[in-house]
Image 1 (cartoon, rainbow, N blue to C red):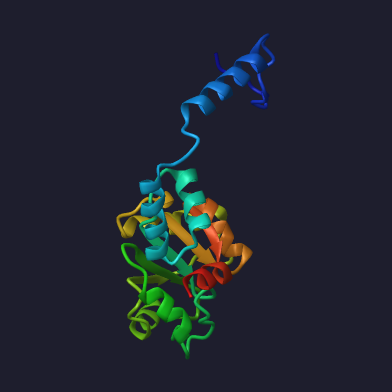
Image 2: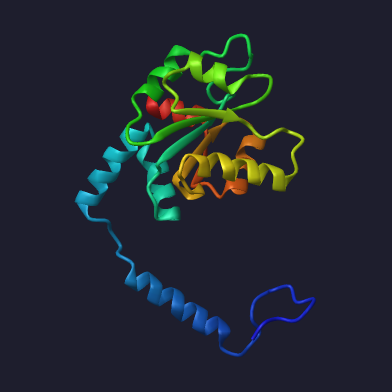
Length: 191
């Protein structure tokens, strides 16, 4: 039975709903294992290292999405490149990126930085594209990010966005990404 016009899709008011929801949650918890096998934990710790992530961040993303991370998407600000005339990633960050294994390293750069020049100056990156404009609508930003992800033969929840600003944090929701991580946390973990 579907709700009518004006219904806010709030909680059901039918008798016994709360009890059924409680029982369902209890049964779900009973069906889920309380601990992860040691071999699985070791594999995930190794994978977190390959991605340059701390285990806690990787485990949280893996649990939320049920998928592995196949790409890291950086903003130019996360990579500390702010000017078109100096598009080189600082050595300490480039060294961290050079150690990433089994994942694409992508960047979206804000104007006036030119993607081709950024990519030429930073061979450690697998692909560089133009970032959505600050003036883009939500729909335009979403479409731009979906195109950038699909172009690399990925889906949103296989991509972890690493950025520095609230605008870049919005990329996560717009692209339905696996998550968002502040660049300070990522580069501290990868160092």
